[in-house]
Length: 187
Figure 1: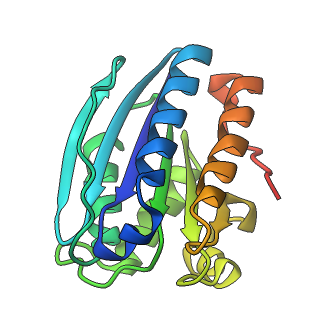
Figure 2: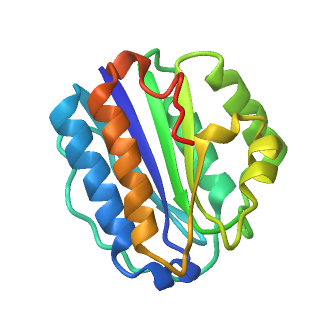
Figure 3: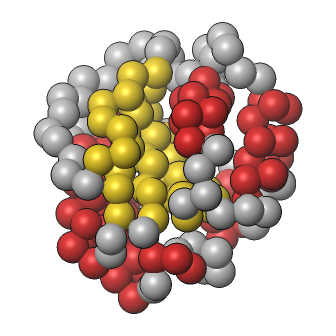
């Protein structure tokens, strides 16, 4: 069994993507549910972090209305602190178009340390990032993660988000859930 955590940016700048982030999340959830024995958690984040569902085998529908700023580090910190003590294989997928600009509870250095510890255990992190606002190579180096864990999409072309989501769901459908993303290479 694996635990899939999705952190979905719901800040105002995500408006340019229309309903594509919601479609992307639903594609990941439905494909993963069909192909693997998984449980799911979803957090939306803008100025604050809101858990939509946690550790459920049957995800529920949710509203998506982007506004506000981007509390990315708070979302990562909340998800990590909620589940880091479990020994289940965990994949954390972050969907965002930009960098953190308003986290209040977690700082970058703390998040980087937590990610590096978990990556050496039973966690994997995948970032789906809007290339207009994030330099993928710089961000990968900053987090200390392999570049192949960062997938970029053009925020001016919303369908690109769905294209990289398809790459992830293809990988999920051809990979044993216990090995999911440890050798992940989509580039």
